[in-house]
Structures are given as structure tokens and as C-alpha cells.
Amino acid sequence: MANGTFATAPATLANMNHLTPRPVKGLFGDNYLSLAEMDFTQQFLPEVYEKEVERFGNRTIGGFLRMVGAEMPMASDRVVWSEQGRLHIAYGPDNGIVTGAANGATITIAQTLALPSLIGPGMTLVVNVGNTTVKAFVVSVAATSNTVQTVTLSVYNGVAAGGGAATTGVFLPTAFRGSALINIFVYGSEYGKGSLDGGNSVDAPFTQFNNKPIILRDKYEVNGSDVAQIGWVEVTTEMGTGGYMWYLKSEHESRLRFDDYLEMSMVEAEKANTAAGVVDAAGAILEGTEGLFAALEDRGLVFNNSDFGVNGISDFDIILQELDKQGAIEENMMFLDRATSLGIDNMLAAQNSYGAGGTSFGVFNNEEDMALNLGFSGFRRGSYDFYKTDWKYLNDSTTRGSIGDIEGVIVPAGTSTVYDQSLGQNISRPFLHIRYRASEADDRRMKSWITGSVGGNYTSSSDTMTVNMLSERTICTQAANNFVLLKKTV
Image (cartoon, rainbow, N blue to C red; front, side, top):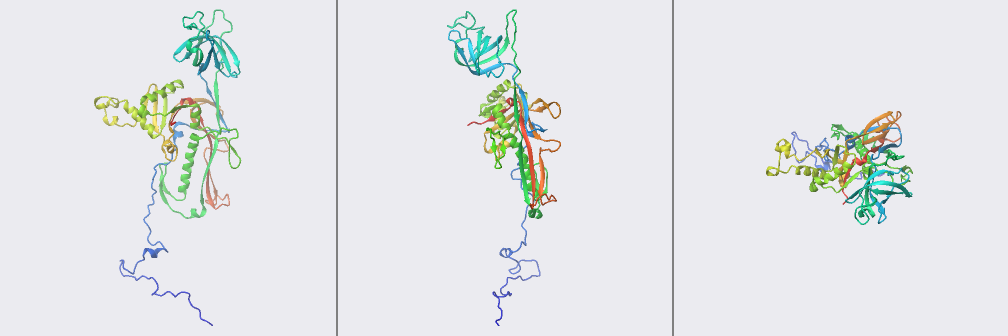
């Protein structure tokens, strides 16, 4: 019977790496391990910084809606509000067609007959084309089609067909004859002695708007084994607090990111423009919701290609002239990207570039240091006050800062009075505010719950900890005609 043998030679001192101990702490050629011999263990730990480096500073972009609006609960799946119409009756600018070469006193106005006629007999009008303006009396109004009203006028300061003085007071100047871009507004009425049935009944116009909440969801998930392997990291949070965290560090950031999504969705959301909506993989129809930018594009003031640093105060005055035509709300907040903010700083600094050496310190209490601080946070122009701040959402390279098409938003610091069905009374609300779904049974403003095998929440067979986050909300942009969206178009 054969004796067994080793496949490899047994370990001996001759073929083993070995260490020779020394009586003192010193490195010799045969008493230490080389790096190549340390692959089986980690004998010397590396120097590890336990504090996380804040490479990007504060990374959240939220805060805009908290500054300009409020959040209120609602029980329905749609919010509806009405906005008052104009008090005075006006029409145009549009193409009114003046008929009759010799007796140009009939103007055809496109007006939906489903609405009450805004212009009626007996009214006195200011009628304008270009630089020519006349005052006219409405003789009669007749319907010529389902969408057109024909208004017959008698002109107070009219002219004859040949251009001379009017003989019957019914002639419009030559500029009004044919198709013309025309403006009309009612300034009063006039009736003869003993007139019957005077005046015109005009219903107060209003426009109804609605928006629906959308459901936002996100989650953070970590498996049970990773939870058992704790590694501490010292962190400073975006909320200004600090401390040591382990796997919850990532969960904390997931929650911050979801908070940002709540605001970004209210700013960027769009309604689906088809009746079928947007259909997800499960077949659910998603209608979307009208976000701030969509509301301003549709109902607000859009100022294109502003360059306050180059064009100076003249660009800004164009905005003021348009605000005068709207609600003329005195206090406004400006949320701007960096380039536009600096452009306004340059615009304002240029207003003080006079005096000795090109600079006057008079409006700065004669303090040079104050005068050379060219970062303006507020200013007054005409009858309006503006408070300026940077909007991080427009600067961050992972949000609108990567596109650069939106330069800023001017938001009125006003309120509207509406009837709240929950409270049963009229309350004042900011023009811009959030509504979220809530009732006595469930509050969906910001829900969070944990499922999985970790932490005693044994609600599923999954060996994970899943932190679920959900919110159902919408934004109401009321009186959008008082907002200004600063936008690039080239």
C-alpha cells in the first residue's frame, strides 16, 4: 500500500515569509510587512476625514413659495375661483371695419353674441385709430352674424367725406375708413329731453379659473444588511443643523430632494392639452396642473429680452407702463437670475453717476463705502416699490440655470379676498398660494411612512427599509395679469 504524499511541499522556515522580532521599536529588514504582504488585512488604517465636505454649498432650491405664498387645505379634487373683470367698457385694439366711403359712420366689431352686448345705444365713445381720435354717439347696435356686432355711430367732431367741416355730424375722418386697428372705450352717455328707457344693462363680467392637485411620490430604500453595517459621517444639513448620521444620511437627502420637487412642480407643471391627457404605464390618465410659469405664459405679462444693464431705466419703465394698465399694486417682489440681478444693480448705480469725479454720495448720506456697495435689495420707481432677490432655482446648474431662458419673475405683494367654504367666511389670501388635499381622516400635505423589515415596521416580506413620501397639491395663481415673467426669446 502506497504512502500518501503532499501535493505541495510543507511550509518550513526556509520557504515561509517570516518576521524576526526585535527588542526595540525600530524598522529592520526582517521585522515588518511590506504593502504587498498586507493584502489579507488592514494593519494600518488610513487617515479618514469623518466630516463631509460641502462641495456645492446649500444644494436646495426651495423657499420661493414660502416667501411669496401660503399653504391651505382643501377637501375637493379641484379648486375653482373667479376673477373680476374690468369696471369700464373698452374694446380693442382690433380691426374694426368702417363701412361707407362717403358716410363712414358704421363700425363692425367682433363680439361673441353669447355674452351681453357691451356697447349699446345712447353710449358715448372715444374712438381711436393711430393718432386720430373722435368722440361718437352710439345710434344703434345690430347683429350681423353669430360673432359680430355692427355699431352705427354719429360723430360729434366728425368731418365731411371730402375732408371739410361735417354738415350732419355723422362722418368719421378718412383714417377710419376701411380696415383699421381701432380702440374704443365708453366714457358716458347722452339722451334727449323726455327720453324713454334710457341706459344699458351690462352684467358685471368675471372670468372663472380652476386647477387640480397632482399627486407627487418618491421613496428612499436601503436593504437590511446595509442598515446593520453602521458607518458614521459628520454632516451639515441644508437646514443649518449638523451632526452624525449613517444610512439615514441618504434618506435625509432624499427628503430634501422631494421637498424641492414639491416646489419645482408647482412652478413648472403644465396641464395636458388634450382631452385624453397623459397616460402612464398602468393606464391612469394624468391631467397635469397649471404651474406658475404656465399661468404667466397664458394670463400674465411676459416681458421679452430685457437687458437692464444696457438699456437702463427705459426698459424698466416699459414694465411700469404695463403695470399701470393692470392692477397697479404698489409693492412687488423680484426673483431674478444672476445676470438680470446684476443688470438691475448696474441700472440703479447708473442713476447716481454724476457729481465730482462722476460719483455723488448725496443719496447715501455722503458715505463713500455705502455708495460703492452696488448690490441693491430694494428701490422705488414712480409709484411702485420693488424688493429684489436672487432666485437660486434660476441659477443652479441642475435646474433652470442649465437653460437660462427664464430671467426672473415679478410677483405682486398683494392679497385677494375670496370666500372659503371650509371656514364659511371671506378671507384674504396671497395672489400666489398652494392648496393641498386634507380632511379630518387624512392630511396629504406631506405624508411619510416606513415599510419593510427594519425598525420594527414589519409590514412586508421585503428585507428593506423603505421610506415613502407623498403629497397632493396644486398652485393657485390669481390675478396673473399683475405678475411679470422676464423671458428670453432669442
